[in-house]
Length: 113
View 1 (cartoon, rainbow, N blue to C red):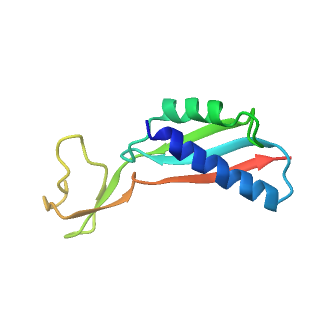
View 2: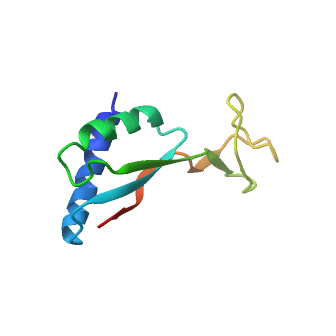
């Protein structure tokens, strides 16, 4: 369950930023998690609720925006969402692709007082 370490790092990042911006209480944290990043939203939410106790984020709402995997074909430049089995380009059939979204994890924003 690597979600615990991910959320711990997230809380430390937000807490550090909150101090720098004179924010005493964080109310909302929004994160973006890619579909293939390998982090389960329910586990992230559970870890957030447990690890924010006695921090500037205690009681804050965690919003999770899950982004789909989007690939770009190296041969024809088409962008598409692959199905679970076939990742080849539906336009030209090439297999050389680059992920342009769906692998990310970052704090989009946080709000506080």
